[in-house]
Length: 100
Image 1 (cartoon, rainbow, N blue to C red):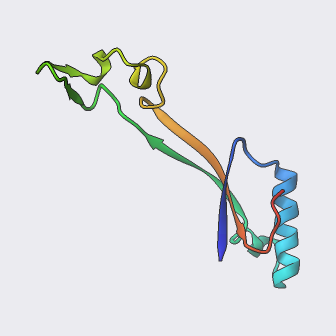
Image 2: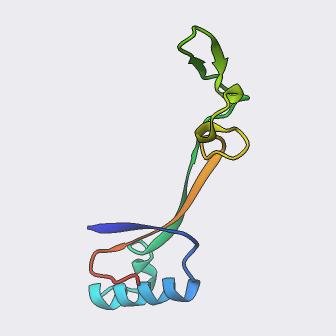
């Protein structure tokens, strides 16, 4: 089975080549074929976009406000992860490999 590890930053190309070489030797395949077992990528997710959709909050007093108008540190439009795109680098590799 392959494992996936999320990374804070992209893996160095030299380290990726090293992992592919190790995998090729262990599995008895070429380094090119090992590229099918050891590879990197970027996973991203788009969160709330106030231009495309609206989320309304119902308050206890009966008023309704758009989420972008709510004064709350957890959902503050200017600084929250709730708005925009979130991306993470990843590496996929065979379970026998040691990444770090």
